[in-house]
Length: 230
DNA sequence: CCCTGATTCGC
DNA sequence: GCGAATCAGG
Image 1 (tube, rainbow, N blue to C red):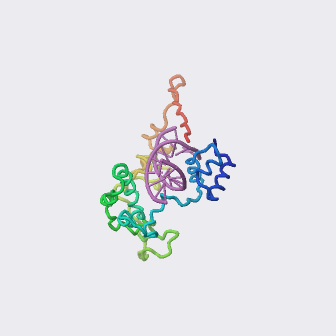
Image 2 (tube, chains in turn cyan, purple, orange):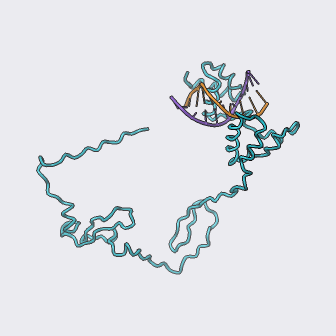
Image 3 (cartoon, rainbow, N blue to C red):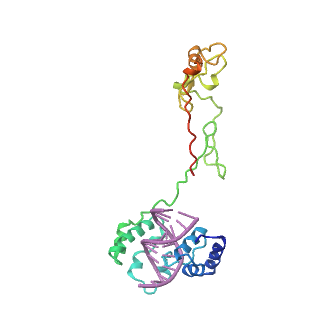
């Protein structure tokens, strides 16, 4: 049966009232306990005391502490190590039952003071003169800004130096693109233009071709519109 | 063995 | 998104 509006409402109410998942499942009918739990999680309902979740019980209830508890003081608190330990535990649980804890500890190294401090790579843009700009949320200037006395126009790299860039284009020089936009050596032809055209003679011959008679033309291939998958 | 909730993962 | 299967503690 589907999760209708009403049933979701009942689920929320009963779950927050403290009913167990199986009780809720029974009251709603036509759903399993697992379905109730799954739905509750998907709805984001608050997690309630689970027997599996809290493994801190070692420190709270000290009475009758077994060697199992003293062997694993706070391993499950370490987020980087805990999954490994749990995985290893699952593996071992099938074969040996209890005493495997020490073996597990051997498998998982004592977490040698992992990175406590995140590097937190801050991306800053570089202002003129090479000083680093602050990012919007930043409170203190990261680097003492020491701009140079005056700004010198950067020289183009030698590969590009004699190439015709976008800024060099006039209506008298050929603007036929050489290479592909975005590539470092992209530039324009730059030769004198064929008067009245935006390109030089050579590139005009490429750009403008005589119209063939209709019957000799190749049909324009149809590019299929890509299916919109979701 | 029952109970519990949490998590995983194929559908 | 759904929920059976599974995990794991009480």
